[in-house]
Structure formats: structure tokens, C-alpha cells
Image (tube, rainbow, N blue to C red; front, side):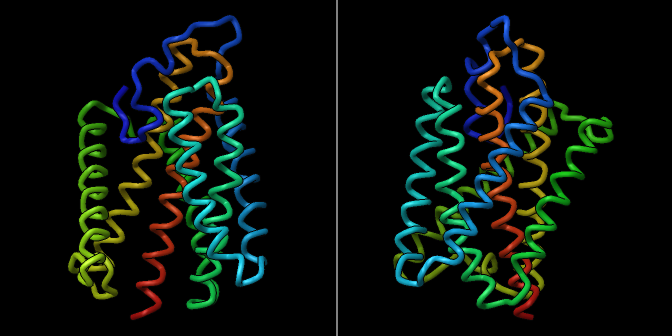
Length: 238
């Protein structure tokens, strides 16, 4: 299965036929449930006392990563791990969003609206076949996603030595252009996720994998939201 989302890259995930099969609408409904859990959790972290916010963010990030890893290797646990990921990741997002909102008033609402707007647009483009997920499209998006991940890893390592990769954190024209490209790649990953879900439906995958696919979509949406926050913060710093 060709996708840059690590949860959907395993070839054996959907190779399990049952009499109770997943549906495209079912996967979207599970995604909506996870989004609600994530937002409620984020609101809790947002209003938490300042002394608790850093611990909540660390617990949320590490716990969310653990849930993703568990689900990757044991997809049958996705009905449990997916809601747990949404709650834990919501804690991290709530604290991060609060920090951005303190620095740039109104930025969080704009990022949320843009994220859901992009989600709706990508779903419309996919279902209407205005954009078709061809093998070439998959390869291109996966390659660009891999390059972005590599640059972020290099930047994190360089920051340990007091330096960082030029431009990606700058608010100049080049930095803004880079953020626009990264946000676009994150949006295109939604198309790959939708296509992977459709492949699961055609393969008559078991019903519980709707949670698995919902988790995969939520991971992409979290990335898109964070990239939009970065982009909007750069625009406001100009």
C-alpha cells in the first residue's frame, strides 16, 4: 500500500476478510469521533494551570507516540488505541495552541478553520475524482514527505548545537514559501489516506479497522494543523 502515513504502509493491515466489513463512511465517522475527543482534551489542557501545562504536553506527545506505535504493530487494538491517542495528542495540542495564542492572538481559530477547510476540500476533490491518486502522485507525495521529515530531524539535531537549518523557521519570503509547500504536502497526504481507506473497503477489511483508518487520518490532520500554525505565525511576525 503506497502512502506516506506509517500507519497505512503495512501491506497486511487490510488483508483480513470478515463478514462485518469496514466502509468509507464508517472510517470518516470514526475520524469525527476522534476529532471530538481530541478537541475536548485540548480544551482541558488549554485551561490547565501553567505549572501543569509542560507535563501535560510531554505526557501527551510521548503517550500519543506510544499509541501510534502499538497500533502499527497490533491493528486489532485500534478501537482502544485510537481514542487514547486522540485524548493524549489533544493534551499536547492544547498546550501548544495556548502558547501560540498567547504570542499571536486569534491564530488558533484561524488555524482550526483552515485545517477543517482543507480537510473538506481534499475530501471533495477525492470523492469527485477531481484529483486522482495515481502511482506517480503517490510516489511524489511520499518522496516530499520523506524529505520534510529528514529536514526536521536534521534541524532538531542541529538545534542541540545551537544552530538550525536556514529558512525553515524564518518569517521572510523564503521561510513562508517553505511553510506553504509543507502545508500543501500535508494536505496531499490526506488524499493518500482517503485512497488507502478506499483500498481497505475494496479489500473487505474488518470493521474495527475503521478506527485504525480514523487514527491515521487524525495523525495527518495534527501535522497539517501544526504546519498551519507555523505558517500563520510567520505571517504575523512580518
